[in-house]
Structures are given as C-alpha cells and as structure tokens.
Length: 95
Ligand SMILES: [Zn+2]
Image 1 (tube, rainbow, N blue to C red):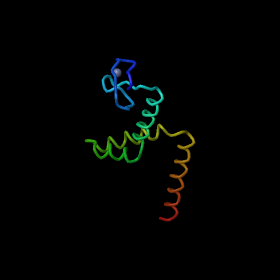
Image 2: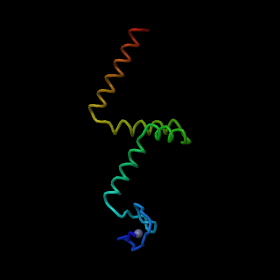
Image 3: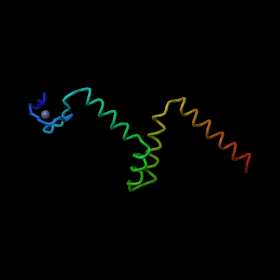
Image 4: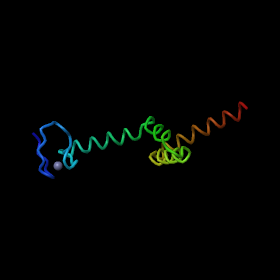
C-alpha cells in the first residue's frame, strides 16, 4: 500500500504514480520516466511517426530537422558538415 504525499490517496497497486492526482511517489522514478519519455521522443521511429501523422509534412520535417540539429554538439555539426562536403566532392569528381 502506497500513500500519496500530495493528496493522501491510498494505492494498493505497485504503480509509479498516484492515480488520483498523477504525482509520482518517488523523485527518482519520476526522473527515470522523464528520461525514458525523452529518449522515446527522440528516436528516429518517433520522428518518422510524427512527420507521417502531421497535416503539413514538409513543415513537420523542417521542425524535426531543426530540433535534431539544435540538439547536436558543435563537434557533431562539424562532423556532419565534413561528411556532406566529402559526399559533395565525391559527386563532383564522379559526375
Ligand atoms: Zn495523489
């Protein structure tokens, strides 16, 4: 039996959060669930799903791309730029 420290609701189930007010019983579990939700949000599958279900797909794609690019570190951006330049140079040589 868990007792909610926010609303006092008694929960006989082993749940992470109170079914009455939605507050977490433990700060650690709350953090873990937030991290898991964030990671689930940032997977390529989740990105693709959001783009596919958006009404304006082009706009959704641009938003996802901007979000992805902003999350990258400077080093990651430079690496990505180097790869793109390399691919571009390769195409120029071949074509
Ligand atoms: Zn509660």
